[in-house]
Structures are given as structure tokens and as C-alpha cells.
Amino acid sequence: MIAFQTLPDDHPDLALSPLLRGACLILNYAAEHGGIGLTATKAFKRDFVRWAVENFEWPGKSAEEMFRYQSVINEADFPPVDMLHFLLIRLRLGRHYKGMFRVTSEGKDLAAHPGLLFKRLISFFVLNIDHAAYSRLGEGVFGNWDVWLNVMNVEIEDGTSEDNLFSCFYGEAETGNDRRWREVHAFGACVLKPLEWSGLITAQELRDQDNKLEYIVTKTALWCSGLKLETDDLVQPMTRH
Image (cartoon, rainbow, N blue to C red; front, side):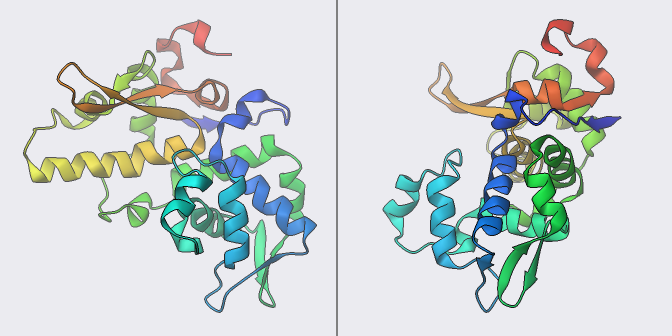
């Protein structure tokens, strides 16, 4: 069982979701400016993408770093905007009309109610998107969200490395094994990255005693408040509220 919760609009944990924050910014910008201009290929125009880069405060993609390497940024160069554009259209919270992206009435309503938008947007993004299609290698990973989330609910309670978490599902990740490396990458891209974008986990870079870079995966407060899972009774009660 996986149940995304409807949180009060002023719940502080909602601020932990980069994807939710980005969705609200796009919907509110489009509502305030009468829409967002589209290119001939129906992507957001560069002026809006630049605004998004400067205002999204996306983890790992600061405006300073983005503009350091390129002065002109298209929608495809900034994956969060590319994904959100797709999601908002699919969920009918926005639509294309006469060369513009315009907010639907439902989109305006949900932008004003982030608690409801969290449940609608994040549940669809996590559970229904083919995340392999957006990964660098384009490869999926065997498994399903019911197993991944319920096992992770217990395994990352006190934080664990990405390699350790991978081994819980697929056995030890052998070093020097190209096929295994690709499976580890697919797990990160198709499972961990969507949860990080959603604001449910964090993945912090650390060096182990051999100076090897590893990623430590931990829950955020939004995991505890925004998800209800079958394995909740195996987790310390103090972490749930």
C-alpha cells in the first residue's frame, strides 16, 4: 500500500519539495502574465526558462552554475522545467493555446492549494512516469514502487549509502562490473532521483575512509508526513506525525 497524504496548505514540510515549488512558480507566473510564450516546437521560450533558472533554487543547479557554462538556456537544458511542463500538461493543469502555455481553472485552484497539489502532482510523478526515459542511459530497473518504498521506509530510517540500499534489492554491487554499474545507475535514476526531486529523500555526498565518494540517502520530514506505507509500524513511532 502506498498512500500520498493531503497536507494543509500551510504545512511546513511542503517547502521541502523542489518539484512542488517549481510547479507553483510556473502556474502562478503563467496566471500573472497571461501565459508563457512557446517556441515553434511548443517548448517554453528562453526568457521564461532564464527566469525559472533564476527563481527555482533547484538543488545542484544554481543559476550561477548554470550561466557559468552557457549564456542561453533552452527548456531541454534545464530538466526540472522540461519535466514540469510535461507534467502540468498531462495533468490538465495547463494547456497550449495560440502559442502560449495557459493555466486551466483547475491549475489556478491547485496553485492556491499546495497541499492538494502535492498529492496530485507528486503521486503522479513518482508512480506513473517512465523515469527510465529521462535517464542518461535510458535503462529501467526491475522492481515496483510498492516494494521500493516500503523497504526504503525501514532501510533509510537512520540513513544508508546508495550502494547499501541497492544491495537490499539486487545484491552486492560488484566493483568493475559494467553491467552492475549500469544497474546501479538505473536504480539511482529511476528510483532515487524521482524521490529526491519530490522532496521525500535527500542524497548527500560523503567520502568514506578510503576517500571513495558515496551518497548517503535519508528521509526528509515530508516522507514522514506525506506518505503512508504498510511498513510504518516497523519504523520508530517518534518519526511519524
